[in-house]
Every structure is written in C-alpha cells, then in structure tokens.
Image 1 (spheres, one colour):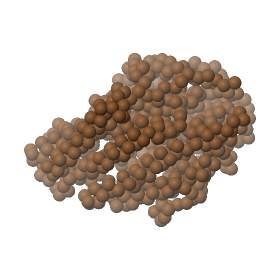
Image 2 (cartoon, rainbow, N blue to C red):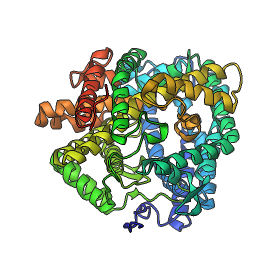
Image 3 (cartoon, one colour):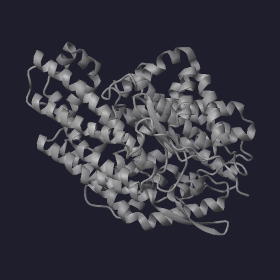
Image 4 (cartoon, rainbow, N blue to C red):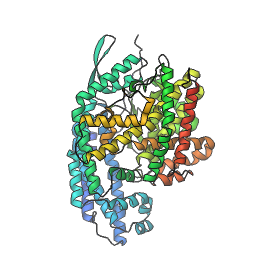
Length: 602
C-alpha cells in the first residue's frame, strides 16, 4: 500500500526578483555588473594593488575607508544576484536560462576575484596595525585586515594572480560545474513492485533509509553500478581540481593544500591534530555502536547499505507538517527569538524540500540578503529529515545574527559555520528523547549516533582520502581504480571491524560533492559537531548566562579565529581534552543505546 503524503514545498524566490526573465531581474543583473565595473575603476584610480610599502598618510586612510565601503556594498549586491541564480540551478540543472545567467555572471565575478587579490596585496603593503589604530572602519574590520596582511605573503606576482583567476573559470570552476550538472542528471534504473523506474541519484541514495534490507542492498548495488558507468568524467574532474589546487598551493608558498585550508578556516594545525587525536581514540566506541546497531537489526555485521537503516519494523514516519510543528515548538523552548525566526522561514517559504529530477542532492543553507536565507533539502520522512531541517535552520539563524555585519566581517570560516546548526540540531534531538517511549528513544539515539558516526568516523575517512589524493596527485593523475583503492583504504582504516570490509562504498569519492568545491571540505564538520556539543553542555550548565552571549558569539564568527572565540566560553581547543569531553557526550549516548539493545554484544 502506498502512503499518501502531503506535497513538499519549493522555495519562494519572488521576494528577491519576480523571475529570471523579469524586467526587475534584468535591471538588478545589469546594475550588479555595472557596480563591479565601477569598483574596478575605483581600484584603478586609487592604485589598489601595489606591493611596495606605502606611506600611511591621511590620504591613504581616506582611500581605505572609501574603498572598503564600496567593496562591501558590491560584495553584498553580487551575493544576492549570484545566490538567486544558483537557487534555480540547484533545483533544476536543466534550467538553461539559469545556467546561461550564471555563466554570464561568472565572467564578471572573475574581475571581482581579481580585485580581492589586489585588495589583499594592497593591505600587505600597509602598516596594518597603524591603520587599525587610526581608522574606525579599519578597527571594525581588524580581523579581516590582519588575515589579508598575512595572506599577502602568499600571493604570486600580480600578473600570475590575475591569470590564475581567469584560468580558474575554465579550470576547477568548470570541472566543478561539470560534476554538479552531470551528477544531478544521473538516473538509475531500479526495480520495485515489479516495475523498473529510472530514479534520480538523490532518490536512489535516499533508499538507504528504507526498512527493507533487500531494497537497501539493491539500491546500493544500483548506485555503485551507476557510479561505475559515470566514473570516468568524474575522475577527470577530481584529478583536474586537485591538480590545480596542488599547483597553486605550491606557487603561493604553502607547504601543503591543508596549510592553506587551515589558514582560510582560521584554524591552526595544533587544534586540528588535537581534535583528530581525540576522534581516533573514539573509534572503538563508534564500532561498538555499529555492532549494537547490527544486533538491533539481527545481523552479524553491518554492510555499508545498513548504515542508515531504521531501527524497528518500519521506523517512525515524520510528516513534513509534523516536523515543522516539532521544530518550531522546541526552538521556542530555547528562545522566542529562535522560534519566531523558524516561523518566518516556514511562513515565507524559504525551504525547498522535495527531491526531484535535476535537483542536487543533500542539503544546504545559503544567505541571500542580510538576515534572509534559502534552505535546500531532500526531505526524507524519518527523524533524520527533522534533524536536517533543524540543522539548516540553525545555519539560517546564524545568518540572521550576522546580518548587522558587512560581507568582510561576516566571512565565517567553515568550522565555526557549523556552530548554530549543530546547536539547533541538538535542541531537537534532546527534546525528542524526552518525549519518546522506549522504541522512540532507540530510534532517536540511533539517528543521532548515525550522524555522529558520519561526522567523526566517515569524515576522518574523507580527510585521509583527500590527503592521500593530494599527495599522489603531485606525481600524476589517478585512475578510477586508484581513487577506489584509496577510498576503501580510508574506510577500512576508520570503520575497522564495525562494517563488513567486503561491503564498503568505493565510489564515495564520486558521491560526495564536497571534494569538488574546495580543499578539505570535511574536518570542519567534525569541529562543528564537537564544538556545538561543547556549547550545548555549557548551555545546560547555565542557560541564562549562555543565552546572554550566544547570539553575540554567532555574530562574531567572522571577526576572530576559532581559538579566540572558543576562549570567550572558557574553552581551550588546542589540546585533546575539550574534544574528549565532547566525545564523552557521544559515548554516553552510545552507552544508552547499547543498554536498550535486545541482546548485548560480547
């Protein structure tokens, strides 16, 4: 019997522009292009881009204040137009009008990227500390200016930097676009109820949440078969992107791409190593969780396609309207401000929840105007769909708190970008646990531990894989078979005996879009989970004291490095102790989950 479900919403883009082919959008697009041109003219007339030490006189300070005001204004304008177009591309890669407009805008954004490099070089020529002391605008942007001054030491020559930006459009950006467009259009033949359907890859991957193990297994096998057929162009994209990243890191005097990524994420290597050390120590606990889940499912050991299996005969179904009500109510238990914000997001249709052909997989949140976001999800009717919704709304709430900041001030590094999303997700999980019966607790704990296992164990496998790819790519291109081997090695190293070693996912490098957008788009998720759990623990200890400073923390995530912001809450992140304490929370959930198992694993 087929369950009749309410239609899932599509997001409403009309408050921004009536449509991609409307006169209002045409005017906004044209004005954006003109603004970029005007900013180029300002940079040219003011000599922005010189490398030689420049005197910091009154004229230079006035130039700085004029430039940074206009630079922020143009960044804001471009973001709104770019995100507006990207929302149409993300939900329908076959939208030729959106694709054409995005391509046209990218040609002009090249000039903006070149201006960013010129701005960095110019800041590197100034006495930044004296500038900060003498200019109110500089003091407001002190963190961004100090980072620009440091980044200037890693710039190539002006001509090389300009050429790199131009070539990027037909280099890694083009390969990333190929990956997104190609994979979003993949359809996979799948037989169900005696009928063969050609399902989008996003729907095939969602079958991993099905209760029927045979459906999960066949979907997994169909997915692997589809990736096998599609692997050649995807491998070419990955080779090209990682090769370009290696080359530019070397030319910019970074020891490795990881060092550049850490700098961009305002994170030091000591913090990363402390976190990874604590994570590796927790692997036996996560393997205990995986063995316990196998016990619940009546299996000797989990296969890859069992990782997202629901516990129980069918798993509790969460209608979308029930998810809205639950999230709104429990956000309100934290604060009226968070509840009212969620109500606005639902009321104004910020969320595109329906999986469909041409739509990218996964979920994300993107700010489109100050305090206003759009959320893409591919909603599934398990509790994971609810927590994903809460997670992405957390990002949107973060954007709300950044609304008062300029674009340069709100440039939040990835590790800190997960702070509000994890916190909001934890609110929902804890509320669900309190209200659930024994079976409900089992399902909720499983949902949380499933996600935590992905963020700690699987993220480590992705981190290891990417590091090994970068190392090997310095010598030559890698074949599909070599990518598969490196992926399997990383999965065996992290999951250990928690999964059947003969039923892993060798094409996870093809399935994860994170590899194609930027370098090391992985460990920040682990940071976000563990940092968010640590903050939630402090909230439980002192709710009112926490609330008094939490929104300020969110509004400041682009204005200090991670260690400094953590220090505001008395957290030292450069040693393993904090990370171990956060993982102790996870261990407690694993213990609780294991205690509810029908048979304890010996």
